[in-house]
Length: 101
Image (cartoon, rainbow, N blue to C red; front, side, top):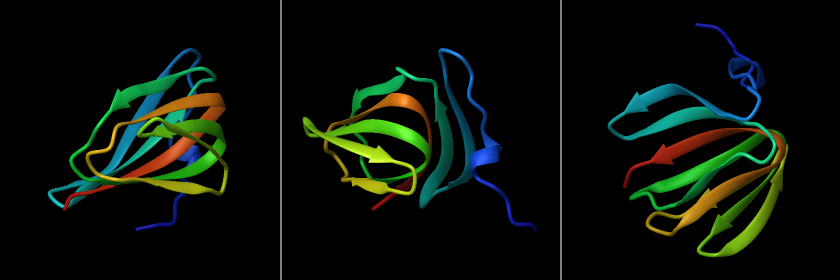
């Protein structure tokens, strides 16, 4: 076991969204994402709460139609069963923690 740098565990790719699953359990998942500028995840819902921790850059997170700007060092919680989307304003890395109810 060792300490790891989350920012360095996933790299940007031009025109893409890159993801790397770190933990996958029945109780939830932890996944790293790297978004190139302008890339995103379209609106969807999840049956469990999701926490987004911004590691680098800046993005717009929309929850139930309400836009929120999040940047490095900030986090936002997306409640279960509420529509949400993510759009990179600039290159953007996030740690996504999904916790099942």
